[in-house]
Amino acid sequence: MDFKKILTALFAALVALCAMAQSANVTEGKKLYDAERYDKALPYLIKAVAEGDVDSKARLATMIFTMQVPSYSMDRTRAMAMLDEAIEAGSVLAMERKGFCTLNMGNDTKEDKQKGLDLLVKASEAGSSDASFNLFKVYRDGIKTYSDGEVCVAPDEALSLQYIEKAAEQNGLEGAAYIGQFMLEGTHGYDKSADEGADLILKAWNFDNRVFAGNCLEPGRALVTYLKANGKATVAAPIEALLKKYHPTEY
Image 1 (cartoon, rainbow, N blue to C red):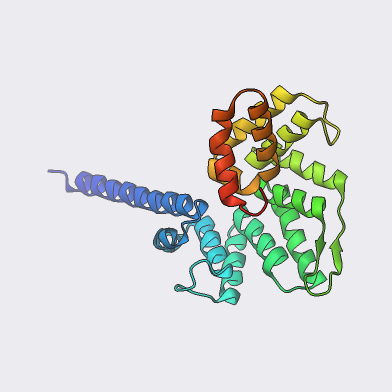
Image 2 (cartoon, rainbow, N blue to C red):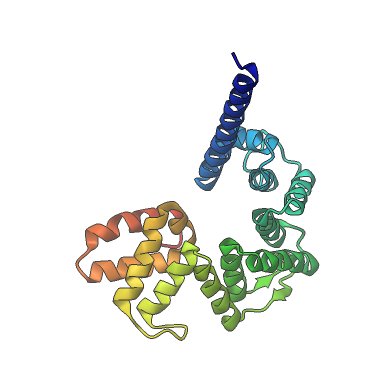
């Protein structure tokens, strides 16, 4: 009996099982995190971080910083350090998450807002559609400090359009949804093409209902109005219901 071959085979099987376990923790942690089921995501993310997955570290750090699981930790300084570690290890997600947290929930100063903006720009340049979408919103609406209303970033329509188009090019569903709205309505320099625009928004909806409902209120409303006007109320109903669930005071 060739014990060397047996041991080699057993070792290979063990490595494969470990890889499967790591993949399962990463995959399940991401799925639950994206669904905002943070308590359920926590044990999977902790295991995935222990296995060395840097994007899982970014998700766990974001949960800590935004206090989504206060029973686990509320050490925001440690959360930022974790994001820095993940960025150093090459996680674009960590760069985008730190930029988002710094811009929206960091110290209420113009300098801090600029740091967050710079990180989002870098993450967008590295391929993050989420960063590009966040930059679209920044330049669409502008940014002020909460305490005294100091303008940190002035609205810039040209830049906002540049970033939403970039988000679409990076396969972000939000980018596709907003470009679809512009086409449907014939705004922001787009020729009006209602059918094509509605189809693009609907594809974004079908890609991920929850993310769409959370991030695409304006395109969603435009799509619902179009569908109802074209005899497709049954298609519009679940879209409208989820939009109202996520935006009860805005819809």
